[in-house]
Length: 468
Image 1: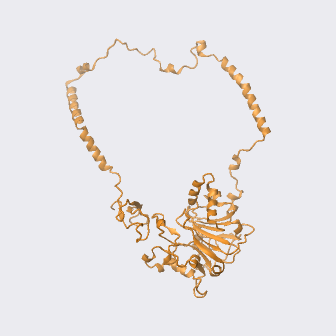
Image 2 (image 1 turned 90 degrees about the horizontal axis):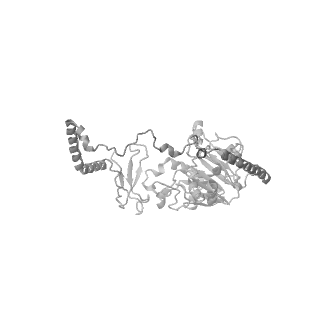
Image 3 (image 1 turned 30 degrees about the vertical axis):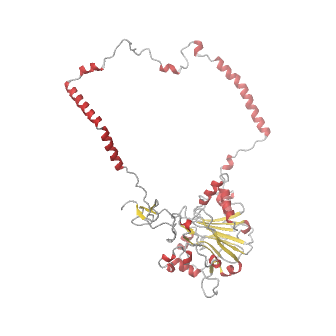
């Protein structure tokens, strides 16, 4: 049996965070191995890895028991990217980046790219430079397509297809109509060469979704769409496919894994293709790192003994000398000399040069200062006294006025409004779609998105945060 799984992981490092918290001592290497072990597949295809080669670490790329292949986005960091992890028992014969062959290295490539006359070389190179496709060739003479096609093919694959205008006229769905066919149809009755394996085994299953909105919490009520597929050519599906499944219980992304089981035995290749990450210079050992030079080497017992003995002798010999030096040094208290280091308290003693105030000397009292005030100064003093009395008498009222003023200026955020359907506190969102309202904030119901008929789903409450 051969088990294949596809998962839009939405950042290969995102699901690892939860794994690392569960196993802090093992960190990323064990976490990546746990993900692959939980998926329990011979071939795992990951989309949206969102890593480039310069940030790819060895624990993510090299997992014991697997050989991996990555395709990176060459133009944008943290964008797109795909990876394939194959068990050593399913090592491919060849591996290649892209779909056009323009990134081929003529060393372990797959080939067979089909007719691409409708595209220019620049368009094909720009597409493959986004890191959206990987080809691996195994000893199975058939084609399997796994991944996120970003299109819900039929109305049954979308939670709200009935309200979408021109659902069947979408260009993505028309393309899938040409690509796919039903296994029950005659081979010459439909131009599609591939079969949607899940609908082949579960043609009427409703609510079989693979992608949900994280912002609206739609996964709680299964309000999503099925845009992740395992496609196989008609002959392969008819003869070897045993099951096709979804794994909605696997968390860590806004997508869930999908997969299939084939009744075939995969014969591994004797050697991994050149695209394998273990052959990258930074992981293959050909690029030297500083860590080996910083490792503490273990010394033999004879060497440790020889290095410890001189140090003990040195301490024995130096201590008497040090004591002798201290005994021969004269102390200021012994010789009565004024030279040497002074005591700290000597800097805080009263100096003899400062005049001492006699205890019998009386300072003039405040009433005597009145004799020096001129009439003009007396008037000013009286005015100030009156003003001070007025200010003191109205200080309480003035303080209250200031308090009310600052409360009106710094009123703080308004209380969160309650939604109209449930009378519960709303949640604030921000418009991210380009347009005149970009960046504006608004309130909506905090409940997860779901069918309008479900009383547990969010209501249609909407309120702008501030008027435009």
